[in-house]
Length: 396
Image 1 (cartoon, helix red, strand yellow):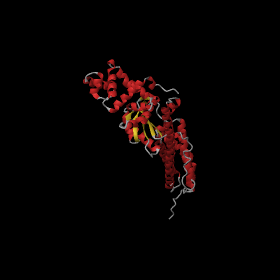
Image 2 (tube, one colour):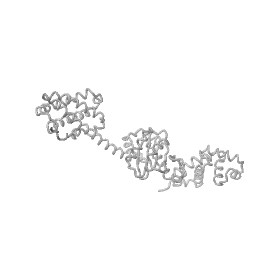
Image 3 (cartoon, one colour):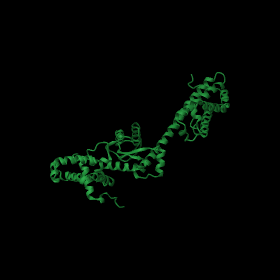
Image 4 (spheres, one colour):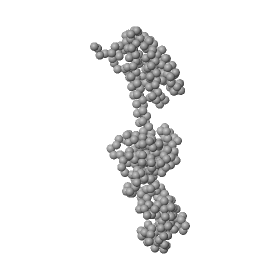
């Protein structure tokens, strides 16, 4: 027995070919009747869809009237429409249209075939429709790949602009293209790149983790460092924790939350500075706020960190009645003699020292009995004693 499938007769092929125009018109009418979203398309897009349907029918008839043992050539079916059509019509909608067109052709072709060949004609439709479905999937896969590559490039450009502080019109346009035109509550998270990991899967995993956390994310890999910009963030440390398992070992630093993307440069600079400085504090938690690394950042010459140390620590202590809290902090840190030694140096009762230590914590948020907090206040005192020159922007 022959292994080749039977093919319709020349008479059937001729009858079907003559009905090509009617089949195309019937398919378009059926699409308009069955799909509300198709009726809502612009006239231009409906025209393109109609051309695709007609091209599919014509391509089928060429194959139907030739050698059906050769593979069906369907590459040109979608070549009549612009690639931008994939943005207006989803893959699911395209498959709906294919089902409609195939249903019309299958229904009509049975009546066109000569007696006894209706099943053969229907089989040919089904064989061809399978190839068209695969061709549609390939078109959308290629479009998605191209969009993904372009979006990744845009994403990297936006992150680079944020780092450089270039909040200009081009950045605004690129951010809008990525859906970030109205995103608020933005925070920058900086971590380490996983060793040996391919960039694309890492970025994909980070995006997925952020979505599960309910946040938007822009990501760029800068060598050993990954810059993540989160948008719509309610819990900055929570976002960093969600991203943690997809990042490499080492510091994970969270910058301050800012109102929008165009102010994110400040958050980025703080987070990057903190990521660089974090090894100076071996006991730093993961993740850690960049503001908890002010002393370490000041050691690197981070001028905003030096200014923040004086503003957040020295200012409140100096504003205490008579400056007693600043005096007590200096005596405690410089003498290193504990409560009793500090009390003798200040000529006050030890309980007064204990009361003032509690007042220092209330005033600036730092506990001098904690080693890291004490080091931070000590750095603030050092910057304060050096005067404005230590906090001035260096000349070019």
